[in-house]
Length: 514
Image 1 (cartoon, rainbow, N blue to C red):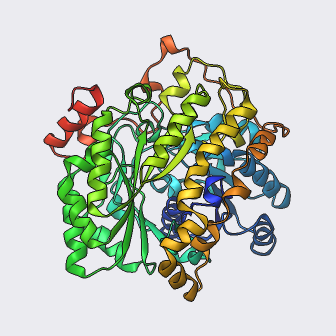
Image 2 (cartoon, one colour):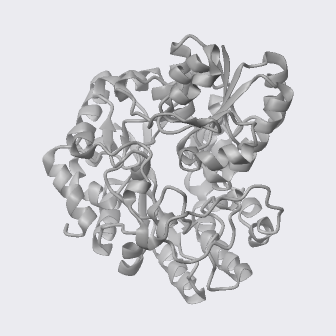
């Protein structure tokens, strides 16, 4: 069959800071190809809806698979699904991905028959079975693990047998030079590990994967790296190098092969401090940039997000990263309850430190514990506003003033790290990019004011709402984390870490760690 895999358009922050290749969709596409299907991949981050329509008209796929990792993309996906069934009445349309897994029934209802099913969990594990059913007996799709359809629901989703068996179909992307993160331009993405053993209240990585943590073998990691032509690599792991031995083994394999790349990764401050030798080694390999989810600059904020790391440890981690000469970007979560004084304190702190500070807005998502337990009432259920850049909970300040303060605070990043300031410090890098025809990084330096504008953000609230999320049915008093899991929690056997690391994770989860 002819299968068209589609990634939806860009979100607000991806219009400036990064545009990552759709690695998850590439993995699913390759699984479909290995099952014998003719697969094409269309990324609407870098292509247009006109391109999508042209593929429908010219190629006439038998199946269209949409990736839905972010809630803000839901309206776009539903509308495209409806357009698809109008143009190709016999085409089978399904949706998969992280966010889709948590709102499967809602997506089907929004689609009003245009979406044949939602595939929950890891798409690589079930896509071949689903396509087999579509090809031979569409009524049998509800026998496929992870399938949710209007006619019924299949068995629970299953884990892929091994991450080493997965291969991304990178060659299906037509515009690989369009992907970047910061100065890494162009930049490819790679996965060394999947899942997270922690349980932060604002995050759904652990609920999706059942608190499992699985790793790619060093041999498999190097094999993938050797096929990547881009000089920049973003390591997509939710928390990089939790297990020190795994990080060192991959690093040593890279060194043996003489692979030269520049790397960007995300990790936790306590992991950074615990595995200093790993990050020191990776600095020598080409680690240039690191993202740390600090989330708060006071103990009260850390407690609210159940980050399970002390303020002192976070600041110690920043000092260590500085000592390595690694450029650090950190994230802070702006709570809707902040007042003007609180925003001012945050701005002063951002100006005092050398790190790049990103400010996101506290946003309870389906799949997070805070979605189930958040006592405050939502002021909107418009999917488009669930992008961590809009306030979906009631704000202490009038909403116009909240956005004024938010953007004013985000402007610190613009003034310190974008525009002419950034160009002066990265002139050699920027010229090198331009000489190679790479313009993503240079273009991003002047995009801030056209994207981050309090009037534009406020106007987004006034737009007609076509699709609204359902609120959770359970009350906080009846909440159980078991209600959140997509993939069944495998317990200790599902975490590829040694006993010492398991004890470290448990200590930080329970707040008994130092």
